[in-house]
Image 1 (cartoon, rainbow, N blue to C red):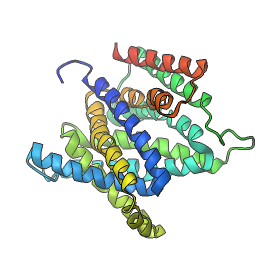
Image 2: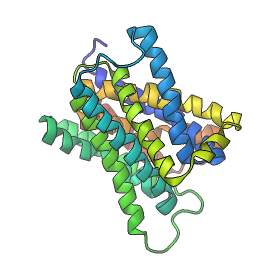
Image 3: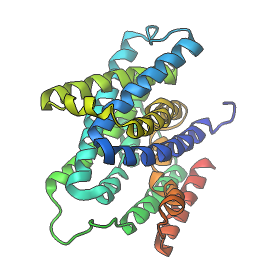
Image 4: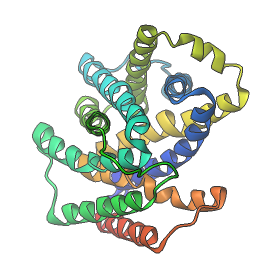
Length: 298
């Protein structure tokens, strides 16, 4: 991509892909369980990435990656896909999706700090201002949208908060490790290494907790498998590959901020598909987030 904001555009495209993924995986998870969906989506992505590598790169597997890339990208897959996603989806159960997504708003500043510490990335004052607007707008939207059954009175379990923080840390560290290990390597091949490591991580978890029968049972639900296939294409295949392209061409914190506008992008589908009503407060939060995106693209 020849223009100077290729990384930022790729990050926005990633957020759009993840909007489709969120809708598909939400419906599939209600049918076969979110953990099973997590494993199956990686297997779908692995098949697509293998086919892509064979057709485009002439190599179905990333055998041309140097050992350094394999080491750090595999670590990124384990931290991001396995550890981060396990924490996040467990947090959904313990404290609900609203608070969990709100805690994930910490990913951009965490990514920016880690990018500075690990790779010496520097952000301008305008970058920080745009990030603050975007994260603030997303948090405003998430805090306003309370699904039925959430927001009940009582103390929030610390275990749920720690799980949500674990999900945020997993995603932030996964992004930084990806950029550190990938350097100039092909983003799709780099994603394939991450997916291989993540799939092995989930396979180990399923072996420990004895959930393989649930995976075999899921193969009979064709609707769920179709949704997993759709989500697998737009998620770990296309979306994650675009996210690696994004961090390859812009600061990690900026990319994470733009990718984190999912709660705002999902508002139009929620209105059109689920007939949800969006309050003036949620609309104002969306405008604030979009303003922050515009600042980051300046």
